[in-house]
Length: 112
Image (cartoon, rainbow, N blue to C red; front, top):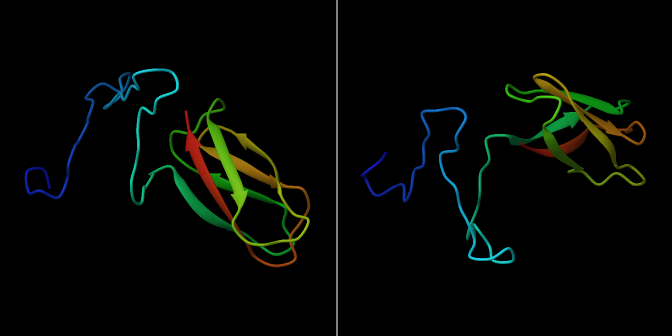
């Protein structure tokens, strides 16, 4: 709720070609944004790759073939790792180096 004291700053754009907020550091090495405490991103999450599988398709509106996506295992699986993440139109596929023997969490973060 704006004005109730629960939100410090809101930045919003009515034009999809422009960002709601721009943060700039004083120099190339100074931080443009510092967060103290938890942070929440609408284009980040965690999904499960089922036992016997080595790929996971995640559907997400706004993902394009040029989207950048980071993904890591969020379960301890010996000798397993994320080999690649390939973005498509409205989805991305996470590939592991080999199938997992039990359900395995993968965490991801999508940015453009």
